[in-house]
Amino acid sequence: MGEVTTQPGWATALASLLLAFVIAAGGAAAAGLLVRRPPETKTLATKRQLTLRIEDIPVSTTVEQLQCDLESIVERELGLKEDAVTVVYHHLVRRNHEWACATATFSTSLPEDRLVQKLGQARDSHSYRFYAKVDGITPLYEDPKGAHVDVVAVPGLGSHAIGSWKSPKSNDVWLRDYLPGDLPNVRVLLYGYDTTLVNSNSRDSIETLGHRFLESIKEFRKSSNTDRRPVVFLGHSLGGLLIKEALVYASSRPDDPNVNIYKACYGLLFFGVPNLGLRNEQLNSIVQGQPNEAFVRSLVVDDDSEPSSFLNRIAAEFSRCCQGKYKVVSFFETRKSRTVQLQPDGKTLTKTGPETLMVTQKSATSTGLTAVADEDNIPLSADHMGLVKYEGRTNNEYRTVIGRLKTVVEEAKEEVPKRFLEIRT
Picture 1 (cartoon, rainbow, N blue to C red):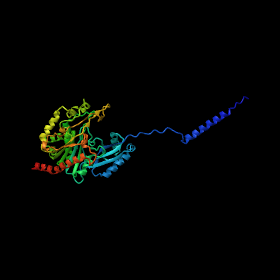
Picture 2: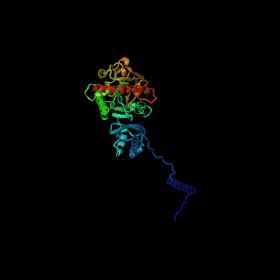
Picture 3: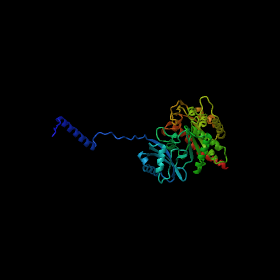
Picture 4: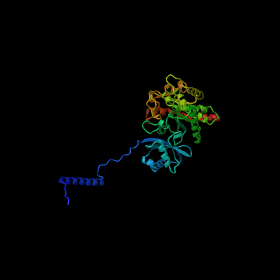
């Protein structure tokens, strides 16, 4: 037999210790006691609040029913439920005798187009249709006790139809959320249109935009059988030029249905309307080489240049056909605005450019409709965009604006019906 070797005592002890550690480690692993790498956490996208327009709502739908329906739609769609989409606010308004529409604000981390797609997929048996773009006429409010005057608001260049009038500190839109409490017996209509600056393929001009606006408001009022109701127009920046173009076009066709708008209009509240041009030369470089270049260049002036031939033309025609016809209030900015700059990605605009007084007092108040002694020109402590953005109902600028609007609306109720009586006789 061969020689039997034995391990020293210390080796045996070490082996026993290692075996005990392995057994203990295995038991700890089984019990889940070992320290492990923490599971990867899914980064949550930042939520924001998006306002959509909802169409094809049966006119019999109540506010409470719409709320339940929207919550049900969100609950039904897994993508919306996982994102924890919530309905923050909604407002329901009658469009005509058959249909209503609503503006609704959703809290979501989804991109705008994805939110619209998901809501559309989950609507099930509901007729509702969701839109991110607020184009054409959107009714924002109608006094349930009866409306005697239409207040029609038109936003400015490259702006969001609803966002233009939104409070800088909340989701409140003063046309929808403040005005009804201060001005009874009105219907508030909002007009939206596309004047995207970056990568635009549009060859629209002020003329085509103005005519399209006229057709939209004419057809909307006709469908609700209110085509002779008094109208007060609110125009911010470029929106004021659209209103002027629409009224010029309507006045040139006395036997056309368009004349009802021309006759029904009583007042114009203009907010920083560039009657003599807009001081924002950075826009020229942004649209250079695009189909909308000529359109933008017709609006922009520098400190030394004269208004474009287009601005001179519309000023002359507006003065000729509308002189003495309308009550005009012109609000002008007293604070400089940051101009926009195109970022390296070629599609993002940021307000990081030089400051400028976008529309001068002279440009904003040169409507050509009133004698100097009759002008109602009011300075507001705001920059160009801030002319129509108010933090609340107690805001000084809002109180000034609503005071003028009340006066014009009350006068419109009395004076406009007389014009249509004159037509009959």
